[in-house]
Length: 150
Image 1 (tube, rainbow, N blue to C red):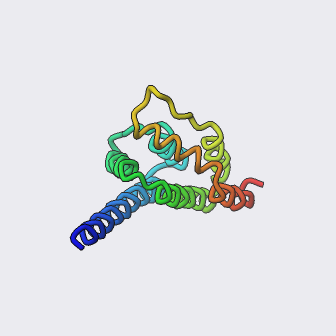
Image 2 (cartoon, rainbow, N blue to C red):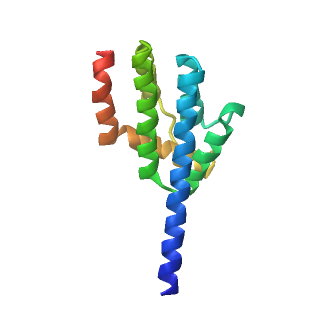
C-alpha cells in the first residue's frame, strides 16, 4: 500500500513539475511576441528548441526545458511545442508577418540529428523534435498554416 501511495505522489509531483515547466516556456514565448520583434521571437525559438542554447533572457525557459527533458515526457513536450508554434504563428498573422511562418517551417525541415558526441538531454531533444516532425500533430500544424502561407 505504501508503494502505491508513494508512486501516486511521485507521479503527481512529476505532472506538477512538467506542467510548471510548460507554463514557464509558454509564458516566455508570450513575452517574446510582446516584447521582441517578430524576427527576434523566431530566433528565440531556434535558440531554445533547435540549438538548445541558453541566453540571459531565456534562462528560466532553458531550465524549464531541461526539466521537461529530464522528466522524459515526450508527449508533454509535443503539446508544448504545438502551443508555442500557435503562439508564434498567430502573433505573426496578426502583425502581418506571415513570411516568418515559412522560416519556422524551414527550421523543422533542417533539424539536426542526434549524435554520440552530445549530452543525453541534447540527444533526447533532437530525437523528440525529429519524432514531432513525423507526427500527426505536426501535419495538423502544416495544414493550419497553409491558410497563411498558401
